Amino acid sequence: MPVLELEAKGVVKRYGALLANDHVDLAVERGEIHAVMGENGAGKSTLMSILYGLQQPDEGRILLRGAEAHFRSALDAIAAGMGMVHQAFKLFNSLSVWENIVYAREPKSGPFIDRRAARRRVADLARRHRLAVDPDASVGALSVGVRQRIEILKALYREATILILDEPTAVLTPQERDGLFDVMRHLAAEGRTILFVTHKLHEVMAITDRVTVLRDGRVVERLQTKETSPREIIRAMTGRSVSLSVEKGPAQVGAPLLEAIDLTVGRGAKPAVDKASLAVRAGEIVGLAGVAGNGQSELVEALVGLRIADSGGVRVAGKDVTEAGVAERRAAGIAYVPEDRALVGSALAASAADNLAMGFQRAPPVARGFLIDPAATAARARALIAKFGVKIESERAAVGSLSGGNLQKVVVARELAHEAPVLIAEQPTRGLDVGATEFIHRQLIAERDKGRAVLLISAELSEILALSDRILVMYEGRILADMPQAEANEETLGLLMAGRTQAAAA
Picture 1 (spheres, rainbow, N blue to C red):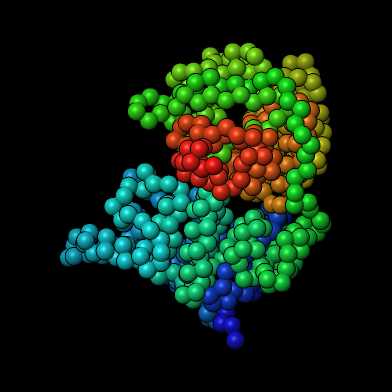
Picture 2 (picture 1 turned 90 degrees about the horizontal axis):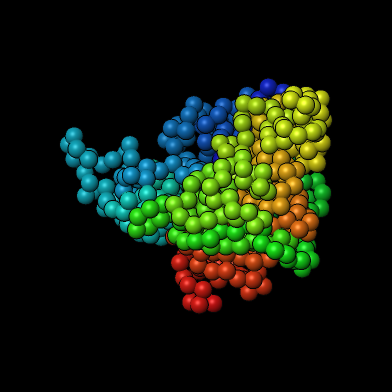
């Protein structure tokens, strides 16, 4: 008979009028990989925060191995054998691998840290759990995949028997993802329990034993993975059928609308962007793939004017904008969905109406002469909120109160409404559920078909392959490959993202 390792019974969490968790029951068995899925705002993150002691429930109980647990903080959860790997890693980049793993639990020799013992323990732990790391390497110089291994080793060093993995594959290459899955299977075989929070259906089908689906704060379905299907999971999440494929006709390509010419960002032997050239033409989507930290963000910032390039040029619709600022480039025809929706894409303290009016405040209907028309601004915001399915109390509510996925919808709605000839979309569906992702994908295809030039930057290779007409791969600041979508596949792109040349990856 299966042994229950972790249970939530009748968990309720309220934020004012919002009921984030509505009498949630969750039962996780020892040694299983258990997926928790749901749309944005379904209550997944709130539930994980409660299980890990980051928040306290208003009602309900948490049981650990059959005994009631009261976690006042994450430190209590860690002491009870829980570990959590957050989507944003919690590492000290200036320290070594072993220093990060043993931090605050260092082996001592008298009053001093026993460095030799610490290195040995980390090396033994990594070997035992098949998580290859160099204990002496500086964390800041390591790939995203290796940093994730360090996060898992941190939890295992603290003797975690339950691991919560929050969107763990968001920034991994396919090869790194497959390596993570091998580690997860190994840990489960050892009797450790894994809670896997993700939006990626193919990963759930590949790695999990059971699935709990949340909708509007409630558990709506409990499924055995081997007895279900992606369509059944989607229907449980959304209450409707959602297309799993992207439908698009052939691109009707026109003249180049966005061009980078030998763009270099950063001086020295290893610039962040190294003589990158690209062209995105009217009526096409060009996907830019690459592991995070290989210059994609710096390239995009140089294109939109947030960062000054050290050399090279940028043209928008044939106009040289190399010396232009952000506002001038926007006026020249660039709309931009930034990767950081909170710090760059929005003003969190401002209302949804104000955020949706940004960039439109000088033209009708938002502007009336030299003044902003509040009624027109509110009406426009309500229309965009309805069109994009943003879950918000009203257009007057501050966007800082929204879940990450709903904040993303606000940013995407505003930028698509700009109707500029060039759209740069950086991680446009990061953190979005399957229904919202389908909607955004249809919008991007529609913008392409209107004749806009779309540059898509995404960590999701499935998204790059589904939407792009042409694909670029960036590695260590250089554009390593430029290929038609028809010639690309996940394996080839994964090898290029790891630094293989196009000829070697073919």
